[in-house]
Image (tube, rainbow, N blue to C red; front, side):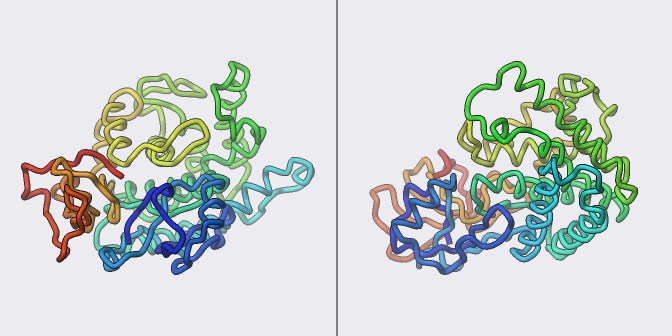
Length: 360
């Protein structure tokens, strides 16, 4: 399969990877043939990339960090919980989601089971979902990324669980924000910005009331917008004044937000997001944490299409942990626009005269 911008797909193309609804259920499954109506609907839902099957790439399968079943269950739990807290009228006078701690402990346990089964922890986040499901899919992606970094740092089982629950629920304070604020496409006013910056405390106030959710997990909600140089909010903490769990969650949150399409901007490519994070070392986040994080991210995820300085169009087929910026690629189109008579591959870590111009 190959990852293709929606402007480049056509009726008759076959979807190679499931597309999810906001509640984690399947919108369009793998194997569905695209129609003009489907393409129009997906574009209107804010979906900008699709995975498409073709003969030249049928053996290329991106290695997702968790299974579709695990992701669907996790997103559904986040969706149900967020919506329960969003309905202020129903929440009055009773405890919302009384089993929240247990439920999210189970959810993160499934995520860790999938992560632990992988031969390596090099992450490629390739799930496709609508813009409306961003908050729910984003929370699951942040939990996956946080889990990977927790493993890399050698956290024990209890630490990983505390981190994972905090990562899944860190943005629960957003349920107290007006819908129009979440979907704003222009710049926020001073008043809107001040309101938005209350969501960490709102989230902390929710989570700290649950006896089966650790207080350090709740601090992921309170501190995920703190920054290493003290420019974050709500308390302008510096350096290690921010709990390490919240530092990890904040970094994962920023990375996944950068590579996701948002109402006010286009998505960053993975390589652009990683470059941004390295530039933020010592200001937004600790240098060493950024280095550890980026060493576990696929700079050019499998199935990504690239343009080379030779004029060739290629698709990524393999990443080496020894040279994340120099993947192995398969040539799909020569510089003159022709298709190779026999598919062949280039290992860019050995082809030093070849450079990547851009992602397509």
